[in-house]
Structure formats: structure tokens, C-alpha cells
Image (cartoon, rainbow, N blue to C red; front, top):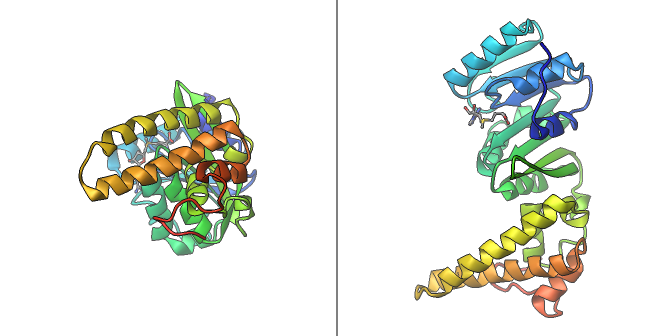
Length: 264
Ligand SMILES: C[S@@+](CC[C@H](N)C(=O)[O-])C[C@H]1O[C@@H](n2cnc3c(N)ncnc32)[C@H](O)[C@@H]1O
């Protein structure tokens, strides 16, 4: 029986290079590995999960589709069950950005041997992007979509210089916003990205109003930092796709508007 994927999983499958060995970390049901073999995209897949329950479900699904020879189901934390060079493509989807960063940081030999890493963080995508930025990866593709009313980002990275951040070095806030929302997504946004940024501006405005009532200096400082980030996003919404103008608007014309966190 042929598997059909959700829009989110299909968007991940679409950026997997054909013919590679893929490891799917946190595979759960193993839908993606089964699809990748059935569609001829992957030669072989390693499907791993930290928990026994999902690994058992994955194993049963793989067997039911007659694919045990091509999909190896393993149980373990992150990439711990994978040898260096065993897979050229790493997929980590459906987890928080901090967990994704920890998995990548936990196995440098496996990550260092990969040709492409595809992540789909459920939150805090800035941790994954900051990891790539500081560990010699460039973002080759970013895509954003709304599926079932939820916003998803899919980020594909390969070894190389992170040239996609050009224009985001004007100040620290610009770089942080690029890590959070994606340098390419901010430069060429679709309707989902614009809606997500507009929604964030509203939520941060509400959070700022709650925080500014506090008398604790630490909270007041955080509130001011939040305001600077919100101002940057508002500038971006007025000049969609132009990070430099967004920085200028947020800071009233100066190159650097955030003295709290330091400038580049
Ligand atoms: C929400 S499911 C996502 C399933 C699938 N990747 C997807 O995107 O549809 C998250 C899965 O990741 C697994 N997981 C969480 N932390 C993990 C880790 N450190 N290493 C491996 N698997 C992990 C969980 O057990 C769970 O099965």
C-alpha cells in the first residue's frame, strides 16, 4: 500500500536529495522512511527513535509494508545508533529547536560526515539556525507552510559559508530575527511567513504590556529587549524582504539599536 504524506512531511521529502542513505531521527510511525523508499527517493533509510513504543510502531509499519530490508529501525537517543558516514542525509522533524540543536551537537562525527541536514523545528527554530551558523553550515533551502492551521518551517543545511545572512549583520537584533524567522524566508516571504510575523508582533506587544507593569529590573530589561525585536519586525512588515531598512526603521536611522546585547 502506497503511503501519502501530510503537506508538512511531503515538504520535507521534497528537499531530500535523491539516491542518498537517509537517517530519520525521531521517526515515530516511520511514515517518512516508508514513503522515501516507495517513491525511490532514498536508497536506504535508518529510522531511529528514543522511545521503545514509537520504535516498535515503526518496526511493525516497516514490516507491514515489506520494507525491512531497506529500512533499519533502531532505538536510541538522537544519532547515537548511527555510525559516522553511514547516512549522507539527516532528517530531524517534529521536535523542539533546542532538542534538534542538542541532537546535532551531541554527535559531531555523524553530523560532520553528512552532506545535507534537514530540520523541521516545532518551536524555537533559532536554536537550530544558530547551530548551523556557528558550525560551518549554510542554509540551502528554507520553506514555510501552514498545515492544519499551524505554521511550519523546513530548513535544509549543507556544509559551507552562511552567505544567506548577508544584510543581517547590521546589528544583533537583525541577526537574532534571522535566526528566529529565517534569513531566506524574511528575504522572500510567502503569505504564511507574513502572517506568522504579524501574529508574532501582536503576541510580543501583548507580552510587553504585561512585562512593563513589573517593578523587577530584570523583567524591565527583558521588556525593552522584546520591544526592540518587535520594532524590528514591524519595520520588516513595512518593508517586506529588506532587513537593512527594517534595522534602520527599528532604530530610528542608526546602524545599531540594541546596546543591551552588544553589536557586531
Ligand atoms: C512528534 S514526533 C515526530 C515524528 C516525525 N518525525 C514527524 O515529524 O512526523 C517526535 C518523535 O521524536 C522522538 N524523539 C524525541 N526526542 C528524541 C531524541 N532525542 N532522539 C530520538 N528521538 C526522539 C519521540 O519519541 C517521538 O516519537
